[in-house]
Image (tube, rainbow, N blue to C red; front, side, top):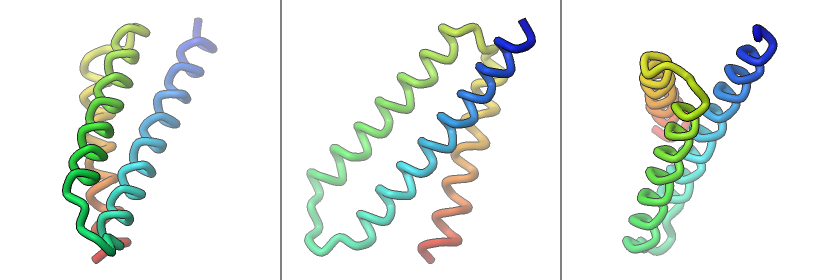
Length: 89
């Protein structure tokens, strides 16, 4: 049982890191924006939001508590904000 939980939490951490890296990639792409493609930016943001929502849905389905999912969300958004500020400003 303990091994299952640690595996679940490890995958949760990897998922959060992956979403932060994808978010940083989008920010880098928007910043390079040789041509401001508003439709591409909109589709990227919507797709990122849907993917993020689906990952949270799967985490709830796996039995992870709502408190832990919200904690992970806050940490992920904070990491994305801090890293994007540090890397791109």
